[in-house]
Length: 449
Image 1 (cartoon, one colour):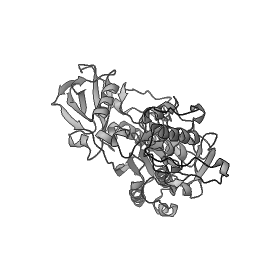
Image 2 (image 1 turned 90 degrees about the vertical axis):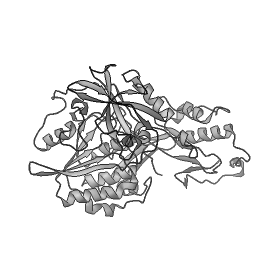
Image 3 (image 1 turned 90 degrees about the horizontal axis):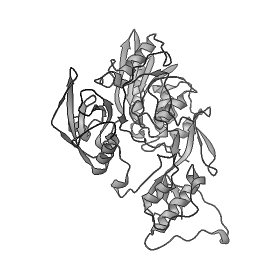
């Protein structure tokens, strides 16, 4: 059976008659055929291919068998059937349109309260009246707490709707409101939530809240940086605190706009696979040629929008993952990265997309295939990338609007730009105990071949 990767044939090889592959099966697709194809694919691409079984289970259901192939260290590899929307991975942000945390609160009946961190514009959550900073006390009539939040959230994603009980807090007293139903859907997100220039101490500071590495918005990213350049920006705050990643090409676009020492031939990303795939090093120009969607951006078209800055301030959180982490790590050889916030999730790996070239099998595999490193070979951030300046936004409730200078992460960046120098090791960090965050495992970094 043929394998296709991103729509391109992986390889062709001359075979003797003795080594000719078995003919493509005919007739109805059997479970044995699907499972054999999955196992053969994983043997070639999977990062942990040495742990795979010798033979495929003949009858085990597709998703169950695929999950049985996954290494215990791998929460990321995915499988879906394009003809069945129910098989796609779900997350609160991209299916309901909001993310939230569950934190302790002494006035709540359960001892805990929900805080809405982010709402996607135009999503079902926004239509239901939710916005960043709002509180809620219960989901489906169950008061939220540290022990039931994960179970309730999983139920929401599985069942496709949920009733939230909004609340207000005045002088420490919680007042509950009428429950509001929010329905599952697909939240289409413009990742550039806010772009503005902050004038502070005679400095022009660019601020960009960028929430996903989506190639379809690469030109909008160029326009945002061109505006920064036109306005004479001399410092940059890049807010990636909830960014769940995405396209490797989009990461190369953003990095090229930020780091003046990058050029078209500069090494950008190194990826190391299993005993069959080996190691590859991509330069910036090559990386730009393989967007996940949209039209490739040439390095020459980036030139006029590039900022010539010696450093960049990047705001992070536990939800910063995948291509967002790769951008932080891969900028470091080329510019000073000053990270503020909390340690990132810790996804230092990339996936490939595998489709059946004969088109008999409709499933699509997305297994982890590579460990990711920067141009210096530095990677290994499975425990997350720790900031130099530890700041928890939950210490300043209600949450400030996106881009507001009262936000504790932005406020710390401005203080550093204007001469502050306290480091995480010396500052007294007053953290709020957060017991649960809605969190997806991030959009995969898809590695081109």
